[in-house]
Image (cartoon, rainbow over all chains, first blue to last red; front, side, top):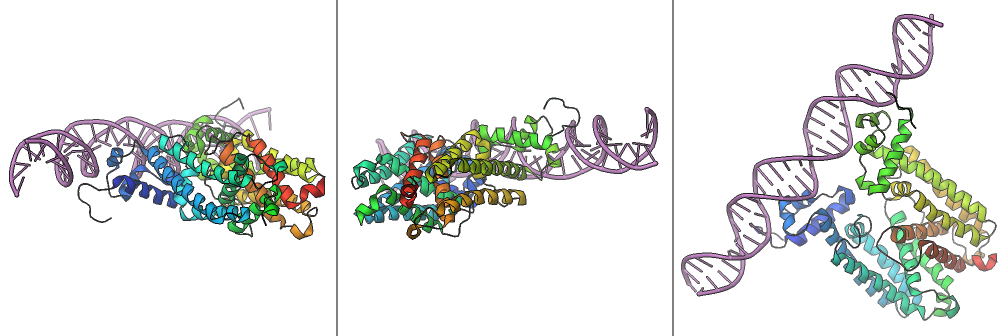
Amino acid sequence: MGKRGYHHGNLRQALVEAALTLIEEKGPTGFTLSEAAKLAGVTPAAVYRHFAGREDLIAEAARQGFEIFADLMKYAYDSGLPSALAAFEATGRAYLAFARKHPGHYIAMFESGIAPNRTPELAAATTRARSVLEQAAETLSEHIPADRRPPASMFSAHIWALSHGVVELYARNNIATSPFSPEDLLEAGIGIYLRGLGLIAADQ
Amino acid sequence: MGKRGYHHGNLRQALVEAALTLIEEKGPTGFTLSEAAKLAGVTPAAVYRHFAGREDLIAEAARQGFEIFADLMKYAYDSGLPSALAAFEATGRAYLAFARKHPGHYIAMFESGIAPNRTPELAAATTRARSVLEQAAETLSEHIPADRRPPASMFSAHIWALSHGVVELYARNNIATSPFSPEDLLEAGIGIYLRGLGLIAADQ
DNA sequence: TGTACATCAGTGAACGCGCGTTCACTGATGTAC
DNA sequence: TGTACATCAGTGAACGCGCGTTCACTGATGTAC
């Protein structure tokens, strides 16, 4: 950061970061290719040396988001093991923390309207993120009483959906307000859900 | 519909419906005031007789969505009573049905980025929708064993978040794919959650 | 029933703007000899 | 170490476009008398 001659040095990444900043400030709609270029200190035309166009720049921002996301989820989950409750509550907290700390990435990933298969790289990153979550659910499956054990992919979907719903409805300036913080809301929700699965009883 | 002289007759509503159609087709980003006017068979300038601008037109579409939504939720819930499971599963199904049948409304309500208090009318409609859901949760609260009874506003928030998350992640072309239909996913999720609350055991 | 007039919904032309994208170019970098 | 040259990242001017919004206007409607 700093020296700038004719060549930028790392324009590609600078553009991604400019895009993230703009998305955070104005939402996916407010972001424009030209403004991102300006913010990176470069002519709009220069963007085309690194991206096919506006959409592909957003796709790259989303891809990086999914990579960070997958790493965080994996780490959070592992750090709560071997307790099912602790592992999943840590994952839930990490989910909200990710949405808060990386709002630009979160928006690019989930609210920008770009298709998850917009680029092969993005598709690979979303797949990896999903499989981290499913892996976690798989591991826990063993602790669930056999008669009430749903497929792992189903209950990872439940946790993901609940987390995403809490972020969208309660952690933005959005729709629903609640006397509870998003964190409390999600933690309580996951707790009730796990109890419904019979996981907590078996666990502690 | 049909006769059109110099005066349209019901332009305001025609514009709302044009907006919904465009939003369904192209998302909230793709919708433009000019195109909505064209679709309604009218000059862009005519829009300003009925709305303060582009954003207020979307706000009105969202408002109508919340009214329909509140009615549907209330009806679905009532029709499942007195069984807690039946009532909440009916509500979940109705939620997904609403998102499917009224995608334009759903997008305007939850994905358009307009603030819920953009207009007083919209704010009133969102409040009403929220209180319908909370009312439902309140009624059910009585059936929950006292030692594990969370505030009604909390568990209505859980159900709402789970439903919304399922719609966003699984019922659009989105992010996560699952071997299960959104309907099955949501129904199973609600079932597990209610069991965790002790509602199902007390109920059947 | 007829006429004058107020009201107001919609027209159409115009505006300034910033967008995404293209193009021929030029300046900087790095490599072969 | 020096020079020639290929590579390629970024420039800057230009484009066509459609957007949201404004304005003075006109045509239709409805009401008072």
